[in-house]
Image (cartoon, rainbow, N blue to C red; front, side, top):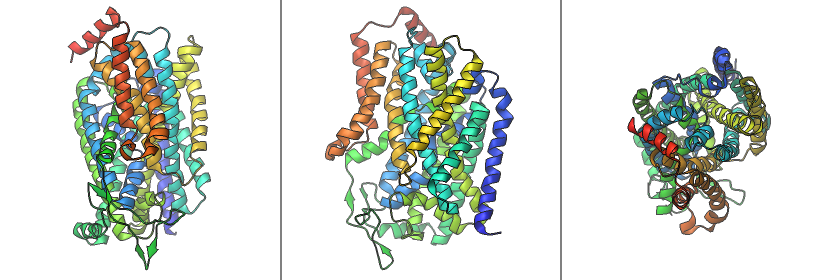
Amino acid sequence: MNDTMQIMITMVCYMLAVIGIGFAFARRANRSSDDYFLGGRTLGPWVTAMSAEASDMSGWLLMGLPGVAYWCGVADASWTAIGLAIGTYVNWLITSKRLRRYSERAGNAITLPEFFSNRFHESGKVVMTIAALFILIFFTVYASSCLVTCGKLFSTLFGFDYIPMMVVGAVFVLLYTIIGGFLAESASDFMQAVVMIVALTVVVIVGCVAAGGVDDVIANAKEIPGFLEFFGMATPVTDASGDKTVVDGVPQFGERAGYSWTTIASGLAWGLGYFGLPQVLLRFMAIREERELTRSRRIATVWVLISLTIAVFIGVMGRQLYPTALLTASDAENVFILLSTNLLPPIIAGLVMAGILAATISSSDSYLLIAASAFAKNIYQGLWKKDATDKHVLWMSRLALLVICAIAIVIALDENSVIFTIVSFAWAGFGATFGPLMLFSLFWKRINRAGAIAGMVGGGVMVFVWNLLVRPLGGAWDVYELLPAFIFSSICIVVVSLATKAPSEEVQAEFEAVRSKA
C-alpha cells in the first residue's frame, strides 16, 4: 500500500468518527430548536473552552498563519498572534459570565440576534433582523475560507483537481452539521481541538530534529533580511506572475522592509474581533453553570498560547527545510502539509492531516449552523412566520444550510484565494458589527435600541468602506479595517444613544438585576 493511500485511509477513518458523533447526538439535537442551536445550555467547562477555540481558529491556524510566517517572516504572524492571545483572555474574562447570565435573563435567548433583540425589549425586531443579515453575510464569507482549506488540502495531498475536492469537503461538512446540530458540533470540536494541538506539536518536534535543532532554525532565519524581526519584515522577490524568484537553488529576498505603527496596530487589532465572534459568544451562552467559565477561561488561554506559538514557528522552520518549494503567497499556506507528508510516517501524517481537516470542520460547521439559525430562527420565525412550530424552524434551518453552503462554494471557486485574507475580512466584519454592541449591551445601561442599530450598521458598513476605498490609499491609511470600524461603531452607539430617548425603566431594571449578580 503506497503512502498516499495510507494517508487517505487514516483521514477517512477520522471523518467516519466525526460522522459517528453527529449520529450520536442526532436524536437529542432534534428534540427542539433550543437543543439544536444551543445544546440546551448543557456544555461542561472543557468542551466549552476547547470547542470555542477550535471553531474560532479554523484551518488558518494550521495553514494561514504558518504560511504568513513562511512567506515574509515572523512580524505579521506574531503581532496577529499576540493580538489574538490578548483578545482571547480578555473576552473570556469580562464578557463570558455576564453574557451567560444576561442571555438567560433576556428571554432565554438562544441566538445572538435574539439576545440583542431581547436585550432592548424591541417589538419590531429591527435589531434582530439587522444582526441576522450581517451574520448571514460574514459567515458565508467565513465558511468559504474553510472550503478553500479543504480544497487545498485534498488537492495537495492526493493530486486531484481543486474544485471537486473543495465541493467534496463542503458536502461532508454540510451533512454532518445537518445531522447533529450544536451538541454534535461542540463534542466533535472538543476532539478536534485535541487533534489540532497534537498535530502542531508532532510536526514542530519532528521538524526541529530534521532541521538540526531550534538554534539552526533561528540561525537560518536571521540570514534573511527582516525575517526574524518584530519591527521589520522580509520582502520576497517575485516575478510578474507573483512567483518567488529562485537563483541557483536559493530563494531571493529584497532589503528588509520597515514595520510601521499602523501595521503593528493592525496585528493587535485582531484581538478586538473576539468580542463580536458568534461562535465563541454562543459557547458562553451554552455552558451549564456560569461559575465554570473561570476554568474554561484558563483552558482556552493555555490552548491558544501554545497553538499560536507553534503555528508561527512552523512557518519559520519550513523556510529552512523547504526554502524553494513554495513560490507564491497562496502556495506558502501549504507549508504545514509539506512538512507533515515529507517528515512523518504515512499513518502519522494522515492523523496530522486530520488535524487540518479537524480545524476546518470545527469552524465551518459552526459558521454554517449559526448562519442557518440566524435565518430560520430570527428571520423566518421572527419576521415572516411568527407562528412557525419548532419542527418548521428545524426544517427551515436545514434548507438555509443548503443555500448558504452553495453560496460559500461559489465564493471558494478560486483556488488561488489566500485563506488568511478571506478570514481577516470576515473577522473584521464580526468584530466591528457585534463587538462594540456586545460590550456596551453588557456594561452600559444607557445604550438604547437606536444606538444598537447605529452601531451595527455603522461598524458593518465601515468594514467594507475601509477595506475597499480607504485602505488602498496606503501610508497611514493602511490599517486593518477592524480597528477603525470598531472605533466608528463605538462612536455611533454612544452618540446616537445619548441623542435619543433613554431605555425604558423596565430595560434598565433588567440591566441592573444582571449587574447586581456579578
